[in-house]
Amino acid sequence: MSAAVRTRRSLGRDYRGVEPVPAVRAAARRPGLRLVQVLQTLMAGYADRPTLGMRAGEAAADPATGRVVASVTGLRDHQL
Image (cartoon, rainbow, N blue to C red):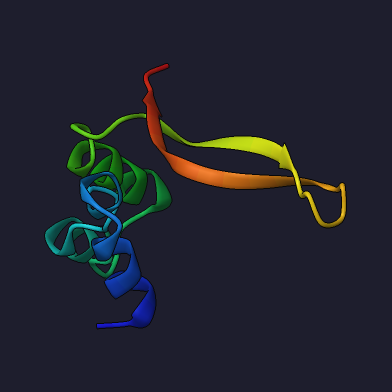
């Protein structure tokens, strides 16, 4: 397991839910599929997930430098 995966899993359920599904990846990587078939496979395989995820954040002035610093505070789901 990579460090990125371990970090994502440690951040909570919002981040664990964005991991690829091995069965969907395998289905989309079958030899001979055309691009449209790959996209259809991915869309069907991830149909239960939010269509767009935005990380919630906030901007605050750094007291030491006065520069505005952005920080990520979580993951918000937005349906289109």
